[in-house]
Length: 126
Length: 126
Image (tube, rainbow over all chains, first blue to last red; front, side, top):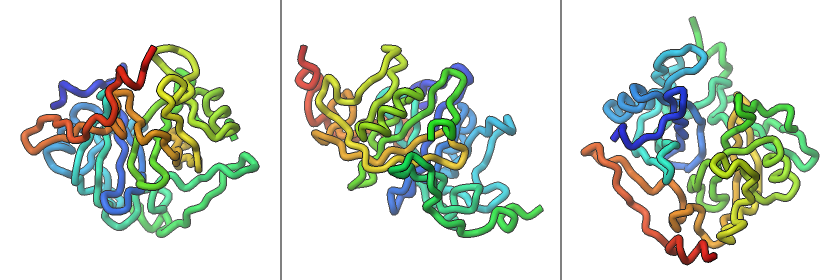
């Protein structure tokens, strides 16, 4: 299983989380071997945080857990696609439903086209 | 526009192509600044081929061009999402509709679950 995956020189592979129901691409994060194996075993999306340099159990702070319905691998075995149920309907740390909220306009500008569902300081209470 | 993008240390950014109609994630490839700018200008998906180390105008050999309907950027500005119309209904070089044709089974095996629409040697005639 894990031997099929082609990790990059940092030992990571990109993983796309897609909403199982709507097909919306929610986010892209990275996995190391441990994160992949934990995701496959627990059916809960676990990534590797490059900034924090540790496993990142999606939702561990926010509660916005991703339940994994299906795991796919692409032809080159270097990208993983997760079909997930997004708890809370919020995948992005900005409090939006998903991370791809900036749209390129005809004028070549990036426009925010998705609204914030919940403010980050409400999500990440300390 | 291009200044907002966070390219990696190799000057590349991953780009997801998603079918505009079905929401199917078709493939992931990489773009350098030139590929991104050409994609935005021509509305035809252009990537950077890491193996061939040159611009790769998707469909240049296969005819399986991708017409870009929308370009999105994620919160971290390090992943691009293209909403595309896939000419020929084949995105993958294996002749399948998309690249994510391997599914992880309960036994931890990768199973091919998508059929080949057109054999690669028919697609890539020399």
